Length: 260
Image 1 (tube, one colour):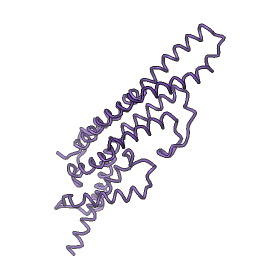
Image 2 (cartoon, rainbow, N blue to C red):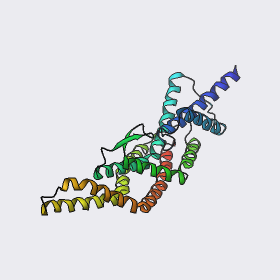
Image 3 (tube, rainbow, N blue to C red):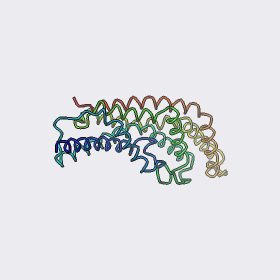
Image 4 (tube, one colour):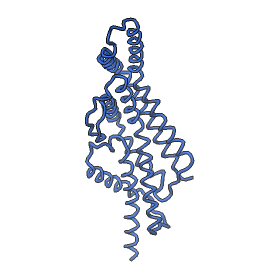
């Protein structure tokens, strides 16, 4: 009977670890993409939970009471979602920057199906997102995320999570950074398009007989694509700096959930 109870306790602990990893995969960049089959993600999450399980401490007073265990599962899912959400900020910023460019270049209506999100997405948004995803893979960002998950099991016990007052300000700060980073990513092309709009407005006043409105469509696209192409090196360096900063932000979020 004692062996059965001990085995049930170990299985319940493994299930808690699994729920944290699954919560992380739901929000994490690359892993949370629709490019991955859900069955593959579940199998990968179960494999990670099995790998980390021998290192997990077994609490002496582990409760099997259904309501308490349910709260533990919800807590572990929340921990995984918080870590995944913090790591996804740079991807969200890239998508926001692409949306700004789509609006300014007049490409908002040129949407197509995006397998990563499962919805219709504009072209510049897809370009910025996939460029960020490729750079993230080249910089081993997906490997860092896995190390961050393993590190979270070392720092945050499965039965002793504590959401301190530091977590909420950290998440608010990361959410606000989406707009700042998105503007930084789209800034060169946005500045050129803004100057172009001013020039077209002046042209409309000087030569009112010209159809400036129709002229603005191809001109905005040409200026936007030219600036995006010429500033690609700056964009890559900007992504690299933000990815490194985002890795630090993920670790700070994990440390904010360590019980005091």
